[in-house]
Image (tube, rainbow, N blue to C red; front, side, top):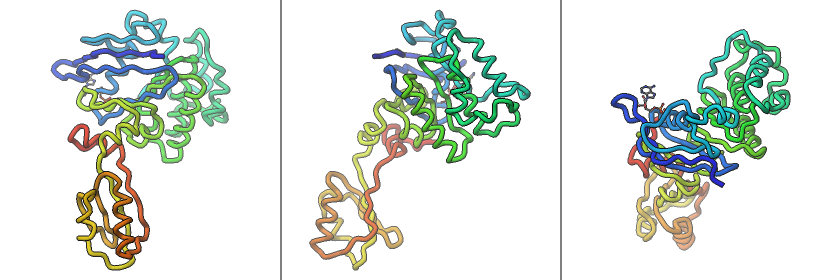
Length: 302
Ligand code: ADP
């Protein structure tokens, strides 16, 4: 069931067109990603969805409501993680959660949220004394404390160390499993690939593509790479003559074969026929990075 519908959204700031004709829908229970480089228009898009900005053109429906006209109602049902938390330094974790709970008709049990988020021991710690990862997790708790149906998480793991990032990803999957629909704004390819059911790739205010992560990669990446270390001497020409092969390159002791179709089978057959032993043989899958380059013609500017 579709619960968010954005149609032909446009938003400018003076002469800057931040979002230009963006349309997408989000289904109940999915993690929908909005992925793009800095300045692509991601935050502007979700701020319009949240009712924080009014569109210049186009329409938005969230849970059957207009985000601007029905903002008070939607505030009860949509949890928003702020990009930078604006909490007072001296507020403790418990005070912050009590304060935010008071804004909602049906607040969640925040003690449970703290358990899940690994902040149970920090109830009485002041905001300023929390580490970066703990502040980030508190901002997630604050986004969820109103028991929202939809949570908008913007740059979820910016500034977190690798372990904290992985923990946060696990947590987001748990939140989704508890029935919350999630819009995830990110400029991290790995995060989008790992978490999102579907994602909109945004570039310069427009949607370059919208698909599952796997769909985006396979749509964009017709080429594959096979890499191996030949344990016996190999004439590269043997591989270059294979119809599926586009290029054969050397990288140190490794041979990298780029091609299409059933490349792995074609390459290993020729190697076997010529009694060449391939060690450390790997297929290199295309990534969302490759997809972004193929779909926009530009490299992803982190
Ligand atoms: P992203 O979230 O993808 O980084 P934003 O939506 O923040 O992108 O920004 C899109 C474009 O709009 C950028 O060129 C940015 O500089 C511009 N922009 C964003 N907010 C404002 C604002 N309040 N005033 C003027 N320009 C803005």
